[in-house]
Length: 316
Image (cartoon, rainbow, N blue to C red; front, side, top):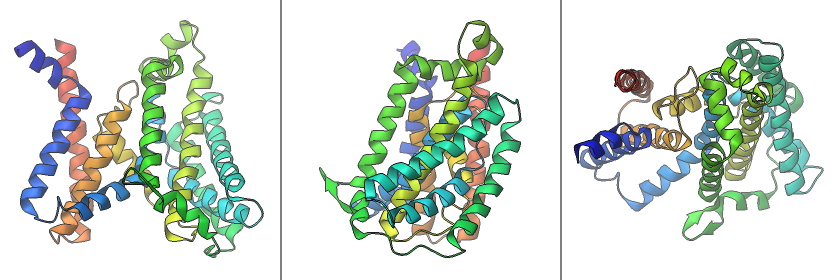
């Protein structure tokens, strides 16, 4: 029994699930409105955009990289989506936006993998470039003539769930399957754990260093498409600050910023924890100016706890 409990507590996903449950119980006691159907529905809706972007960020962080450009990529691909919707059918416009995001990600990944530049520097530069281009391409104006049928990506429902929540679930299932069941996913972990050892083992380190940035860019376009579908317009400022939320969700979910450790399920719990904390503070009337302090404290605490637990596991 003791061995089973020890194994469970050493499991990243179990620890994240326990923390999420603990926060949910605490907030349900603190506020009678937390567990109401309308609020739970709101929690799911708030998890969609950051949850999708966090998938791509997980891929990048697992390789030991970082992607600071995700918010700006959302802004630029959103504007490109809005312009494409004026000329092409909705499915074609969405594909073009996703392809644009993947292309931007491939440039960042190539600079990191082939030219050996630091991910922080490359994606910081990409962040500035993409946000600037979003303003230039849009003429500094919001695109408001989004076709009404696009809203079906959010407001249609199936089995009682909104379509955007279903899209989130499907993307997490696909990401989980790839990272845990496909050779390419295991290679991403290997690259993050020890790049030189992965290279000596004959793994295609360069490709699997570039791939996560492609995935990240493509998912930024998916996320901004759902924003456009929900609010009916696209702003060049879309995604502003998203890089912080995505990184926070992945780190809270137990991933190591040094690469090689983390899981997509942990990231999902990280997203839920972050969204629940913000939602709970809103319900309790906490000033928005204090919410950043709370999230920052949780991030530091999560990194500290995971560092202590992983250190203890290695000593055993």
